[in-house]
Length: 409
Image (tube, rainbow, N blue to C red):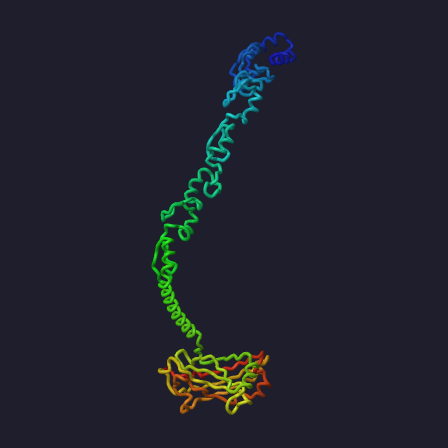
């Protein structure tokens, strides 16, 4: 470098006196920007560069690199490919390039467990750690066989459904937790079991053998208990039936009576004398009169064999003692024409106002009037054929009590 500078000066200043003057001028080291503080005559620069710590020289290990003297030690220790160094983990000596390849693969280097248990183990022992020591390795529960991490399997075991627990009745064998109820119910020899007839009232309790012996020896007692239960349930059933019947009662004062299988019933009425159809009972109000309609398809009295006859009966009711007698409310019968066009329908309607002198409308005795009151010639058989009073073998007859005339009690 210094020879190059001098040759440039000689070309610029060929005069020897000028060259002498220049060589005596003061200059800074060429590595001044790198931090070298040297300055002196130009002629002394060459000698300075032979010792300047910032000047680059060939690597002392002959790797071919030009390294500043000040960085030579670091280069020889850390970066020179021909350096010799020991691995800090296994202490084996390597050349520089071999050490770089060795780093990251050294079996003695401590690394964190890949299961993130927090432990650091030498690379060569990682598989053994994962299989035998890692707190995050999966291990099976010895009761149910399901796999859990090592640090949670103990907590799982405390509540595992298949873990054996002692029988509360202190019988001999431990029982899996999930089978404890079945064991106590069906298998435990020490459990105090109730008699199988406890629902019938038997209060006996004892071991399984004692209960079996008690059952064999107490047949008569159990039969009495069961009979008492059956009688009590029969009374309850009757009460429920009566309650359901009361809830299903018609208390509107109007009944729409649906007479199905009309053809068969008419044929029976023509073959037998006095065939009477009776409707469900209904009330004029919740606490009113109890009524029932009756129907003779082939007629009765003056309408026999030619007309259909309808009647209304007054039945004995629960509230008759509070009602006014005789019965005095208008009753109407309506036979519905089931024509497909409602505008063309022609219903048959008949009504009457009870005569208070007739015995039919007095307070009924326990045995109601056999016939009641109504219309023997309500509608002729010929009229039944002309209109759509019977459709799909069904007839509809409405019996209605005028609510405006119901007497308050």
